[in-house]
Amino acid sequence: IVFLVSHLAKERLKPHLLPSNVEKAMTAPAVAVIGHDLDFPQLLPRLFPHNPGAKDWFHDGHLRERTAFRNGSLQGAYFIIAARALGLDCGPMSGFDNAGVDKEFFGGTDIKSNFICGLGYGDPSGIFDRSPRLEFDEACRIL
Image (cartoon, rainbow, N blue to C red; front, side, top):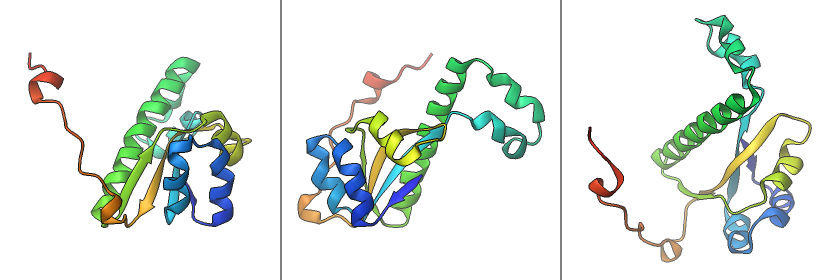
């Protein structure tokens, strides 16, 4: 996660945002750039010590990319839950140029951006109510 808190850091992000996300990102006290590391298997001996050979499971580049994206998405969701538990408002956004953000903030690494998330205390007048959700039967099946 790269936390953008200075005006200069957010200005670096600005050209990569969709127009509808510029004001939200620029006015947030902080913007977190959530990324996932495509070279994560190299960390597995340290982070998954009970199976030191786990890094060998990911020789296939496609599997490694899908796994990094999936696990990074889960970690990003946990990040949002933790921030909200601390009383922060979160504004996750996917409307940006990933390649541009990757070059700007993760250049020279194997980290790829997934989404960005504005953090702070939102103005209640500008926060809309939760959008409708699908009914259980529309989204789930029990077998």
